[in-house]
Image (cartoon, rainbow, N blue to C red; front, side, top):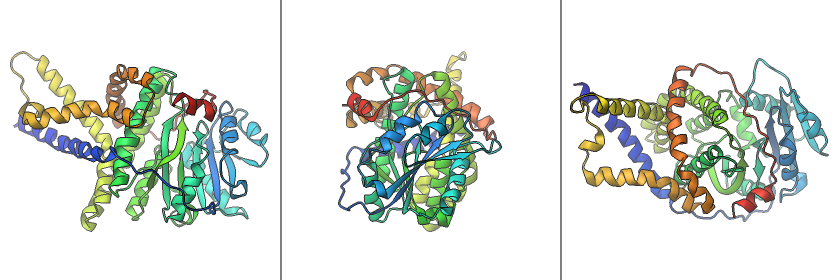
Length: 412
C-alpha cells in the first residue's frame, strides 16, 4: 500500500518534470528581436538600492550612456533605509534623482517600489513606462530601444534577459550563472515561443504606467517579481520575454551568501504557492486557458524541489537498509526507452543551454562543481518550507565594481 502510494507520488512529479522537458525543446531555436519603431516612449528608470555605495555609481554611469534620447528618460535611485553614502553618490550625478526612504518597519524591495511609485504619481511629469533595476546591475545600452519596441507593439509588461555580471569570480557565481543561462534559454524562451506567459525576474523589468496605476503595485512579498507576475496572468496579461534586451546581474560569490539569498527566494516562493497556485489553476481550468494552467505549474516549483528532496532521500535511505529495497523507483519500473532518454536529456540540458548561449568555454569546467550547488537547493528548500512565514527581508551585499565594457568583453 505504502509502496503504491509512493510510486503514485513519483509518477505525479515525473509528469510535471516530463512536461518541462518537452517544453524545453521549444527553446532550441529563437527569432532575433527587431527594432522598427523610433524612440517615442518615455521612461522612469527606478533603481532599488540599500547600502549600495560601492556599485551604484557604475550603474548610473552605464544608464547615462543609453542609446536612447536623454529627454525621454529619467533616473530615480530609491535609497531605501540606507546608512551609508548611497544617496550622496547619487546626488553627485547631474539630472539623477536620489529618493530617500526611511521606514525600518517595512524593509525590502517590494515596499520600496510601492513607496516610489506613489511618489512618482505626484510628480508633474508622467512617463509612458516604468523600468526597474537593482543597484548592482549593468544594462546593455540598447535596452530602452527594445522596451520602446515592445511597448509600441502593445506589450504591457516586459522582462529582459538576465545575464551574469561576474560568472568568473567563484564556483558559486559560476553556478548561479549556469542556472540563469539554463532558465533563460530552456524555461523563458520556450514559453515565449509557444505564446505562454513569461515570468518576471526581479530586475530588468518594464511596466506600462497605465497598467501600474490600474493594478497598483501591491507586491510586497519576498518574491515581489513572481507575485506581480501571477497577478498579471490572473488579469489576462502575459508578461513578455525580450531575449535581446540584456541586463547583467551580480551573483553572490560565497556559498553562504548564495544560500541566504536562495532561502529568501524559496520562503517567498512557498508563500506565493500557498496564496496563488490553486486559484490560478482553477481559473485556468474554468477558462480552458493553458497560459494560466502553465503558470500554476510554474508556481508549484517550490514543491517540486521539496518533494524531489524527500523522495530522493527516502529511496536512497531504503537502499541502505538490509535486504531488498522496500520501495520501487519510477525509473526502475518505467520502460527503458522512456526512462533512459529523459534521464540523459535532463543531465544534458545545462551544457546544451550553455552551448546555445555561446558561453565562454572556460565556464564549462564549472559544470564539475555545479552538482554541489544543485543539491544544496534541497536543504535550502526543506528549511524554507518550515520558515515560510518569515517575511524578514535579507540584504545581499554587492561589492563587485565592473563596467559594461569589461563584462561584455569577458563573454566574447
